[in-house]
Length: 121
Image 1 (cartoon, rainbow, N blue to C red):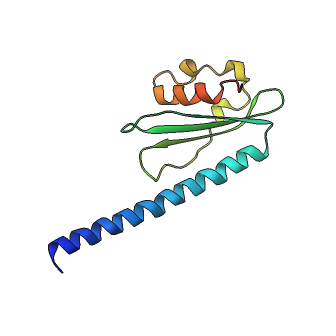
Image 2: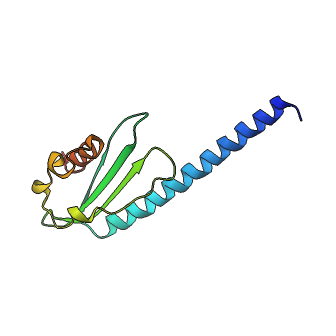
């Protein structure tokens, strides 16, 4: 096998692996999001941007009184990022969720939280 063929084979294997791992990550997120939606009156979702910075996806489930009943955050730059709960937000009212106070040094989380609590129009 020539060096060019070996390089092409490695690139193809890496590409297929990336597709499979991306599918796995999306599947885990969707299952966690479905669990969140099953036990709530409304769900707010926010996402931070950034191409080369860790992205943050945050989902908050609210009960009928607009208190956080469940939560999920997924952050990272690789396909190995997984959804985790944010128990420090549970029980807080929507109006008490102030992104700058909750995440004083993390602008990506501030952005995601502000979009997740934004009133739907």
